[in-house]
Image 1 (spheres, rainbow, N blue to C red):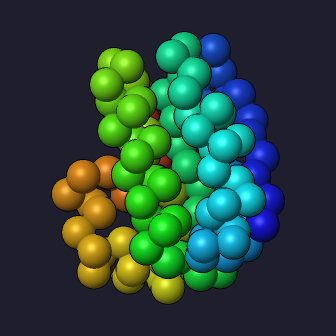
Image 2 (cartoon, one colour):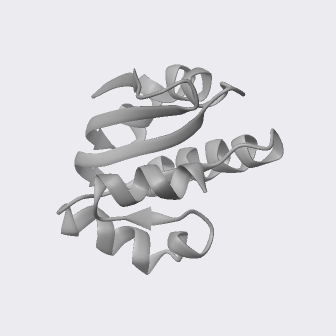
Length: 114
């Protein structure tokens, strides 16, 4: 499990998560993910294109951080790219109704800044 970030601009941060977002994987990144997503100066794109497996614990972490960002007046969106497995899990759980999900990075960045 790994988590990295890039500040794309003064207002946009991309957080890249790779590996398995199961219970151990989510536990391994949850504190750092919350800290990176908590920045009030940034809109957030969470890149899940390298996630191999997404469990309910990982979905919970995404929802919690998206809601926290929204309460601070920010916005968090998800980028899945061509990761159909993760995209299908998100669709099946209704996440796109709560958190915008994008298949193109440029669209995700525009969506985060909207």
